[in-house]
Image 1 (spheres, one colour):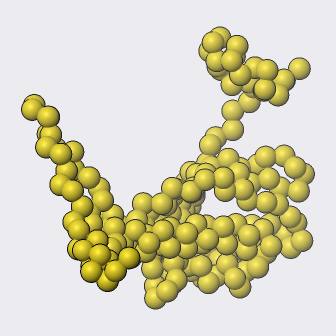
Image 2 (tube, rainbow, N blue to C red):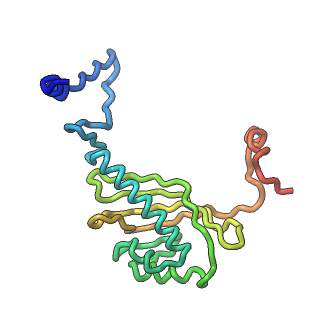
Image 3 (cartoon, rainbow, N blue to C red):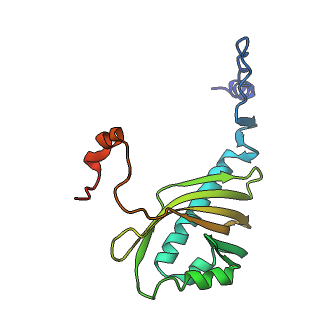
Length: 196
């Protein structure tokens, strides 16, 4: 391919979007082209992917550091003015929340936080995000103890993402089998643990 052919190919513009059918408004695409990059809500697509992965790494690092009782590592994941909130209890400031987290369990007692999914909503400027993560905590007796959702506010400080606020919304324990409809039971009962 000649240099002239390459130049012509690189100068081609993408075709214009087809006009909307009569009576229908033109759908506004969330992707806006700017040169060779794609921006989503003002943040370059690649930058967004990198930020989302870094935030998910932050979520996982919290779980592993807590489970390993690595309090030094855990303390580096928070802004100085961070807060950890569960119900009516609020631990404000990094020192306060670390004093709480590091004394929840006796030294040597093990358990595992499981975070199966994380939804990240990045701010338009790419400097903060709201994050929701489901969490299951299974202690050393292998019985599920916590079923909850974390609601996090995270911020970028330099090249790192940190928690500014973590709020835990537990699912309240309710004894007995779930009150499922007859149709739901006929669909799911074969895969459910029997209470007999």
